[in-house]
Amino acid sequence: MPDNNDIDQRFKTLTDQISARERKRMTKIAEQEWARQPRLRRARRRRRAVIAVAVLVAAAGGFVVYRPDVVEGVRASVFAGFADSGTGPTAQGPEQAQVKAADVSPFHGSPAQDYADGTKGLVMPKARALGGLSRKEVSTALLHARKLLIASHLDRKVLLGGRPNALIRLLDSEQRAPFVKGLKRPDKSKKGYESRRWVTSLAPKSAELVSETFKVSGRTRLTTFKENGFSGVRIKVNYLFVYAIQRPGRPETLTRLVAHNLGTLDVWRESGRLRLWIVDWNGGGTAPARCDVDDVFVHPFYPDSPPDLTLKTGAKAVDAYSLEEETNEECSPLKSDT
Image (tube, rainbow, N blue to C red):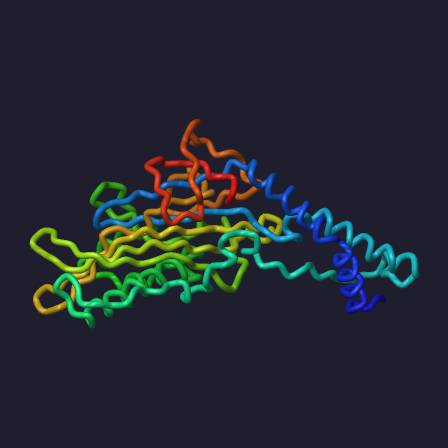
């Protein structure tokens, strides 16, 4: 039987022989192939005092992912060498030697490769006295906003469709009950809660998480407000959360999924206590997610997905990784450079 270490060494030697120019050429071809896919961004409903969710999908990167045919060619060369030397496994043998693929980050080749890991990307501005609140109260509010972002986008169980318990605990007492009710019975009216849209949750059995960490980039801004007889601080969040996903058991469908959270949290003092009220949440849109499935979950659009049925011709293309771009379209194509 062959030595697995020897197989790995031969595999490494063969892959090292592939020139940097060839790798660049193959990557460019793969990117062009991906760019032709009809990737879409699905807009999320944005309502005052309600919340929405946002997820975007981007192209998978890396040599092994882009060119499985090349890896198979190398694999064949390795075993051909064993066959010529008479040391390879026999056809009747139950054991099969395993060749390890190159360890390529699923975020490689995308803007997300330079983003911070997880909570490190949630950097809050320096607290200061503002809107009638003390510096300490503003600091408390910023910490609360950060916890909301973690609960809605970085909870692995919630990402896979679990109950968002951490987020529920963070809500104002007057928002908590309707939110929980909306989890069980989503209300699509303007005053209703489609609570699952407040978090990033993948449709059941539509995806599995590939990476241990997620990538995060964005910013938080402080301003003031005066509404309905109250005044205080308005916290506006604008963040991208990038995940590596694939169809369950299908590594060849590796895809980057990006959640864009555009949200607002109003903070004021009432009857001696600090109120923290979500005005809107997760309003950045989803792409490429399916637009022709209208429920509260995110349905990723993979390279092998059938065409979406709702795309309008002439819709303005948007950049999945932009913190600035917004659109009123329910469904928009993505720019090819994502």
